[in-house]
Structures are given as structure tokens and as C-alpha cells.
Image (cartoon, rainbow, N blue to C red; front, side, top):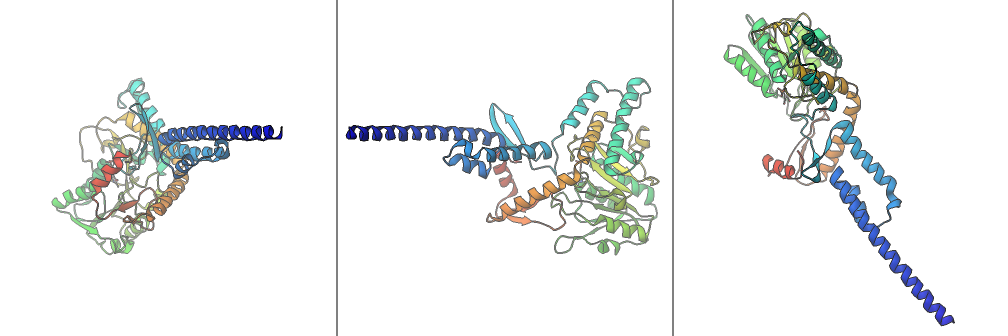
Length: 409
Ligand code: PLP
């Protein structure tokens, strides 16, 4: 009897052990499949991968999984930094990091465009109800952007984008104030829309002085102020550099310029700073500020020029009375409405998004520092939205195509 009991006990234990192994194996397969799905959908994550590769029971770590998934979802929804896309029948994840080039339009912007195309499609210059309705939409957008920038609605002119805004600002200011004064001061790192417009003005007889940065890539107000003289008509300086994120000392420089000579006009290309980096428009001491819609989750084809009340510039286009005759041509109401909607949405979270971007940038830098051969150009005072890195020995386009194959843009 005792031998039988012993055999039964061994058999029972063996059956139990085999059954347990089968259950664990099944569960591990399930866990792996479960995570493969979520990895495809939400992207690679160190924690998710480790979890999927280790055998354990699902319920042990369910709180952690939830936390991890919520983090991905939060980044995606709130900050548009990670954008999952389901394409071609397979679930793949797109990492869109090229937000200094352009941003994905937000839902509010897309809705505004559709509404204007299907309902409020009148010409805002028409005097009938359909026209007045379109005009109302446009003026509402002007107020939304003015509130986001911190200026009066009548100080904003709509354009097709920042390139047009900078052309109008620089050429319009030079035409209005450049009869006797022929010197324009700028930085050596401006965007092409400023640099090339100034090169054109140089051909028309203006002298353009491009101030160089110091050895660390930083700018100082006194280097600009040293150049200011009785022949200066205009100073143009970007707020945030689009390649390395450097935040220029615009406030201090323009304040010094105005103190030296209030007649000199000041222009700021604020494209990479607007609704990203907190700043006070009045403190910039700028007479003219260029903005772009598609950098702030609106659409390509709409921009704005802030023209401080009382400042006079000349138009560069002719043929209509729109936008105080400074930007003639029928306004693109759908794109303007989208710009307004996006500006209003983003203006509520500038500080919060700034802090989040700073955290993400710091964590990216920390991870990149662990990799050999990556050169990080982390300038102090940089906007957290831009990070410049390079890998000596690799051409940029090679890295670009390598990342592109992994849906990283
Ligand atoms: N200024 C800066 C700093 C930019 O980054 C850009 C766009 O890349 C522009 C101006 C031109 O803007 P848009 O594409 O609206 O003409």
C-alpha cells in the first residue's frame, strides 16, 4: 500500500509538473504575442521588449504594462511626438521627429478646413452673407492668433507663410525706410528666407552686415549694437534657430537698438519659437514678427506678419485692398481658419509642452551619450524642440535613409 501511494504521489507530481510547464509555456507564447502586437502598435520600448522575452505570469506585471502603454498613448495624443500609423494592412509605427520642418495638422485645424470648404466658402471681400460669413471666420482666426501671440488683432496681416512674411517685412521696411539709410544688420545663421531676401536687397544697393556667433555658437547683443550707426535702417534676428535650437538674445538686442535709435525697424523671424518657446511679444521690442502656420500643427500655405501699430512698410505685391493693401489677393480662409484653431489650441499648453519637450530632449541626449560616435551639439539656451546631432564618418543622407526604413523621420 505504501509503495502504491508513493507511485501515485510521483505520478501526480509528474502530471502536475508537466501541466504547469505547459501552462507557463502557453502563457509565455501568449505574452510574447500580446507584446509583439503592442510593440508594433506603440513602438519599440526597452521595458516592453524585456518583459516579452522573460517568462512570467501576466498578472504579475499588469500595472507596469498599463503604465507603459499609457505613457506611449499620452505622448502620441498630447504632444504629437509619436504618431502611430496603420498602413498597408500591417501595423507599423511611425516616429515623426521632423517637426521643425513641418508638423502634423491637429484635428481642430483639419476640422476648420473642412468646415470652410463645405460651408463657409465665400470670398471674405464679398458683401453678401456668404462673404460676411467667411470674413467673420477670418477675423475670428486673427483674434485667436493675436491672443496666442499677445498682440492686437489689427496688428496681424495674413500671408501664405513665413517666407512671404519675411519678404514683406524686410523688403517692405527697406522700401519705406531705406531711402537715406542703407545698412541692414542681421545674424549669420538666419533662415534662407531672411538671408536670400537680404541678398536681394544688397543687389539693390543696401549694405548687409551679418554678425558672426562667438566660438561656442552663441550671440551677444553688444556685437549687434556695435554695428548700429546713423546709416542703419533695419535689424533682423531670428528667435530660435531651426537647426540647433539656439535661442537668440532678441529682447536685449532689439532693446539696445531702439535705445540707440528708435527709428531703426526691428524684425524677428519667430517661426521656431511661436507656441513652442514661451516669450512675451512686447518684450521682444520687435516692430515686425514673422510666423508660420504649418510649424504649429496648422496647414502649409498660411502665415502671418505682426506689424506693430504705427509702423509703416510698403507692399511688395499689388492688385487689391486685402490686408490693408499690404498683402493683396483673396485670402485663403480655410488655411487661415486652421491656423487660428491650432494657435488657440496650442496656446493653452505652451509651458506644459515646453517642459515635456525638455524632459524628452534630456532623456534622448542621455541615451545618445551612451552610443559611440554620436556628436551631440547641445547648446545651452537651446529650444527643447530642436536637437542637432551628427555622426562623423556617415553622410547625413545615409543616416536619413537608414532611419526612414525604420519609419523614423
Ligand atoms: N524661418 C524659419 C526659422 C524656418 O524654420 C522656416 C521654415 O523652415 C521659415 C522661416 C519659412 O517658413 P515657411 O515654410 O512658412 O515659409
